[in-house]
Length: 341
Image (cartoon, rainbow, N blue to C red; front, top):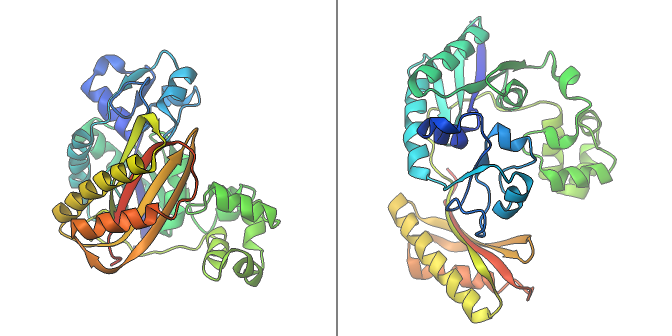
């Protein structure tokens, strides 16, 4: 039997969980974020498909979302509820004769050996729906990259197959941002170099890309454009790569002492999370969102991995000192990253 990779992605997961808890919201635009108050500073965690039709998307300020979709229902973000449903989803996926690699709450790769991956995909959809009452989309691929991208074409609640055979037909004329791993900033850089589409990036000279984007990033982008990707699915349980805390302030911070105090508080909270995780932090990052909405992140590698709150706090304050901008601050965040592997 042939080896296939399936990428399973729950449709509008967080919003769907909230609608299950409140069936009367079905069909209405639902926006989840912060404490659910669109007048307070926070960002959208997720939006239902009905809300997305108004241009609302994850990461958007809640106030802007409220202007775009004033009739939406706004709900508080409730991670424990989503984690509980996710556990049921992952248990359902593991009931199949497949290697399951969880990627987070709402998505996973499945490595399967079958002559009919479409039948497996349909079975997965049926079982997930039966166990959780949630729909999922399934991408079928001959590697992880293609399976992941295929899911985007399958949404909502569909199945799509993307392999070497139809890669050029499907992807060639799409912008490079359509590739998993290439964000908006990198796509703009590629376009400026003369590679706005996947096909043009695939034909690019890797030495030119290396010179302009870096010796690893440049050639890696070209590899993505050619559709290459890992074919290994591992059953190692999903573990977070980092722990982070952030706060959006209702009044902008302007005094350096206040900023440093808030970073110290966040760092100590992150340190508590690191201890609870049972793994030391290897790197500390600080995120600053200046008014009105300019976000920058700086980070540093620790001399040795640690769970010591004092060391993590000191590192966060050291990173904070690298920000020279004196504009008012509306959000601060601290992230502790765990060692790779």
